[in-house]
Amino acid sequence: MDYHGLRPNGKEKRRTSMNNPAPKVRALYSVPEAMALLNLSRTQIYELIRTSRLVTVTQGRRRLVPADSITDYVQLLLEEYRAGGDGHAA
Image (cartoon, rainbow, N blue to C red; front, side, top):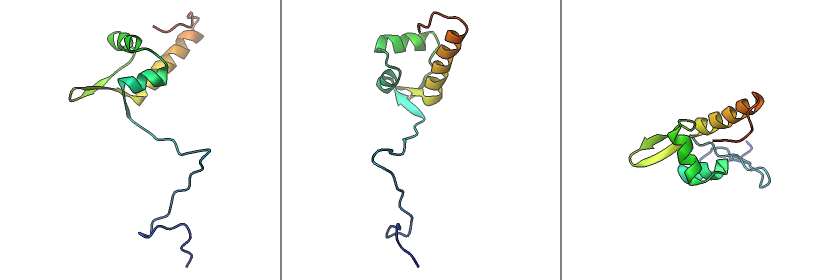
């Protein structure tokens, strides 16, 4: 039996390259993380939230931005651009 690639618990090791690490899949992002992902200021993010262009949820006192909301917002920008918008967000 070949034990190459198995951990002591018998489970197979995951192999990832240093040049191509496995992406982390997340469902929720904090507001500062959403700011970084969208390259927007805090004021711009909260304006998008106020105008319902970016949907958020709360967990306790924390405001979190679902990953789908970020994707939907980017799609909205692309659709507005294709429809002849000026290409500027919010």
